[in-house]
Length: 464
Image: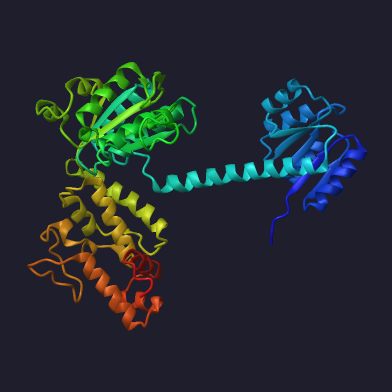
């Protein structure tokens, strides 16, 4: 059943109250009216309307006074002001005080309904965006997890860099160490501290596209500057204005484009492809790489002047194997994320033996490898505590766990296996045995129904 929206009307003109009340009730709104401003605030709080319509010119307290009180008390409602004064000054004053919109008398009832519906829809969209941002933040690592000396030192530098609002930052580290997480953390600190709210964070992978396409993406272009330029297009530097742009894998950027980037960093201006004028940019440039840029400079693969420009504020993330005390809190962090994401409430944590195995692994893929492992376990396993038997051999190197093997444990052949094909084949066998009854197939595999559905979708077996 559709929820009825509520509107509170405050106006000392009985004719207006009667006309608006009938029209809004006919349109499906629940309406409460008042012709005297004294005590109206208490009635508004009791009624909890979606929209309050206030006549500005009321005996004291007038509409502006009540609007101020609504804002001061943080009453969760949207306010539309009613006024017979059609000067811009009155409207601007009301909007500055927090009114969502205003209507000038005389008005048509259809106009009122349009304004109220628009105000409600805008607020609904704002709430939806807030909800999605919160939901998204639950699954995006925006905080740096760990308590090792290396992480504490990194966090101290990050905090100083963010407070200083520097223009250019270079972050280095092996693949999977969390360079983008650190970049986002810096961005969040910078713009939370400055009160800039949701400043843009634009990310581009410098190795993922050809040089010509990367240049047009970064700088934008003017209509007609090349064959496919059908209209003007803003580049990513422009779109990142007031926020940050992340240049991921900058070590893969070609030399010609490196020289253009250097000019951007030095002059803080860009020129669109085919354009004639320079445009100022106001964005923090964060570059990341898993390359040793000093070696790349020596080998002639990276411009020395660009390296010096970027490395003024330089951060290095040490690999996970060199900060093993961070493995347990990271594993717990990812377990919390993925048990929520996949609705697997049965897994509670790790056994001490599993913790020792995780801390002993070499983690060539660093934090990303650990994250992927925890996601895999959450999806595939149906156990209360994760034990060493749930950790695949490629993580342990086949030698780390020497405890008792689970009954009927699978013996890995010397030649190895294709794990994905094995998983797919087992799921196909279970579905066949269960005659495509997914609940029964999940039971045969000793995994949850949601886990089976995920695997069926992953391997494209929906029509099987």
